[in-house]
View 1 (cartoon, rainbow, N blue to C red):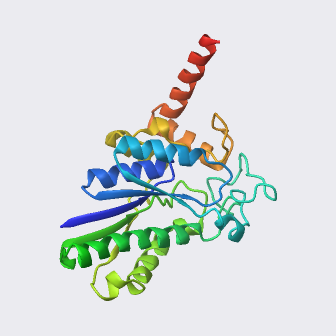
View 2 (cartoon, rainbow, N blue to C red):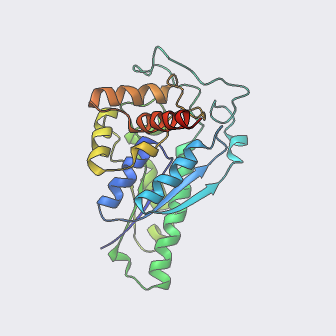
Length: 255
């Protein structure tokens, strides 16, 4: 069986872990990183380095126009909305925060599926690989446990999207090839994800989770808080912070 995989790689801890898992499971993997008009490019830099270290083919897709469509978010419209800091309801997820980007994961999945379908069609129609010998999978680091309450991170969402992609694609309708949407960390806590990442040996020291784009994570946004909580519960020091502190200490000595 030829296992073709596309992983949506943001450059964060979760997507890096999922990318490492796809490689470990024997997929021929392409990483897609989407520049959708987010407020900073720090995570894209991280994704580039992570893809290089994992030995992945890497495509950076510029759809920065999306910020004009999905403008009701602190991640695409920081002038209008401030990024929430130290939310009291972060663990209970009573409210969907303004860092939610309207239908972002739906959009990302459609792009990943279009890329993957092109790859599969080329295998079938140009390279004459029998369709029954191809397994096509999209990997996404959705999480329904330690997340910020986003509606597009729930298991039921992915079950329905998977069926929709099959019905709306040539590889599905004509060749009977399904899009398998893989969400391997969807029911894992952040601590469990971190333990998986360390076991896989992925380069966590080059991941970026913060909603801000400074030289150092802000430590106050939802993503920073959940990351810190995860490392504390897993019993590990955050390799990114270790690397940054070492870098700054070296720079200070050289001044």
